[in-house]
Image (cartoon, rainbow, N blue to C red):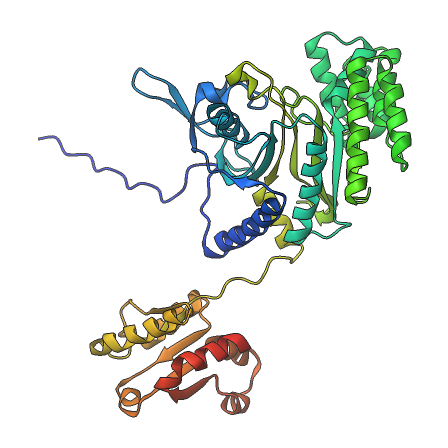
Length: 489
C-alpha cells in the first residue's frame, strides 16, 4: 500500500502585499476617522457605506494605468454570470449608487465614505494591496464653488486631525487648462499628449530646465543615465514652460500667466476662468494662499478628471531610507469627474470629490508625534483561588458597569508571575489581587502597574519601600479607588 503523503503545514503568513493591524493601530485609525467624519458632517455630508464587491462592468475602465479592470482588481466570475471584483476605490461605487438611487437622493448629493479598498498591483515598501481610503464627494453640482468647498473642507480636516497650518499645502490646477496648453502646442497624438503630461508631472523634481530637456531631446539623470525626451520642437515646448512657470505670489498674476499660456484655446480659457472662480470663493471663505494655492504643476488622473484637480501635500521634512531630508508628500487628492455617472445614465452628471490616504496620514501624524498616547489595556483581576471565580467576576462586573475596562485573568492561574506578565503585555494600568485572607477581611490589593514599572526603572531598594506601587483598600471602595487611580494616571 502506497504511503500517504503528509500534507505540509500552512505558512502562518498573510498573502504578499497584505498585513494585519493590532489594537493600538486600529484604535488610532478609528479615532482619526471619527475626527474626519465630524468635519464632513459639519459641512453637511452624509455617510454612505456601499458594497465592497461590485460588478467589473460597474467598475468600468477607470483604474489608473491599466487597459482592463481585471488587470488591476481582485476579480472572479460567478457561475456563467457576471464578473465580480473587490472595489479598488470608493468613487466608482458612488457612481453606481447615485445612478441607481438618483430619483430618491437629493441633488446635489453630498456623501462621505470610509473603508478598505483593494488593488491587485505589485506591492512594495509601504505599498499594500489593501488599504483604507476616506472620501467626500458632491454629485450634481456643476458650479466650481463645490470644488472650492471640498478644498476648504480638506484644509479643515488636516488641521482637525493634527496637521497645523504651515505643515500642509493644498494645490489646485485644472485639467481644462492642461488641455488648453496641449491645444496651443498643436498636440493631437494621444501618445505624445500622455508623454507631455507625464513630463509635466516631473516638474517638482527636475525643474523648468529639466522639463525643457525632457520635452526636447532628453537629459542625463542624477545617476548619469540618459533619458530620451519626447522630441518636441522649441516652439512647442514654450507653452508648457509658460504654463509651469505661471505661478506667482500674486493670484491675479498667476491667472493672467495661465491665460497667456493657453492662448486662444476655448477649453483652456474656461479652465482659467474656473480657477479664478475657485480662488475668489476660497478668498471669501477666508482661506489664504498659505493653506490653499493655485499650482499649475499638479497633474492627476490622466483619463479620469475633467476639470479642477487638487492635491494635499505635507510640507514638513522627514528622512528617507538613506537619511536624506525630503518632504513627506501627498496624503490626499481629488478633482472633478463629470463623466463617471454618465456611464450608467447616458447623461452627464457633474461630480467632484477628494480621497484621503488614511494610512499615509496616520504615518505622518505618528512621525510628528501628534497621535494620542496608546490606549490603556484593561484593569486585570487576578485569580488567586479558582474556587472564588464568582467573586472575581463580580469585581469586573462592577468595574464595567462603571465604564471601566476590565477583565478576569482566564489563563492558567497556577503561576501568579505569569498573570502579571500577561497584564504587562496587555499594557494594563492596574492589577487587582484578592486571596482568601483579603476576602475574609473585606479588602483587596491594587497594584499600580505603570507606577511600579517606573519605580523599578530608577528607584533604589529603599526608595521602592517608601513608594509602594501596591496598596490595600476596602473591597467596597474598589470602583471609586480604581476610577481615582486611572484619572490620576
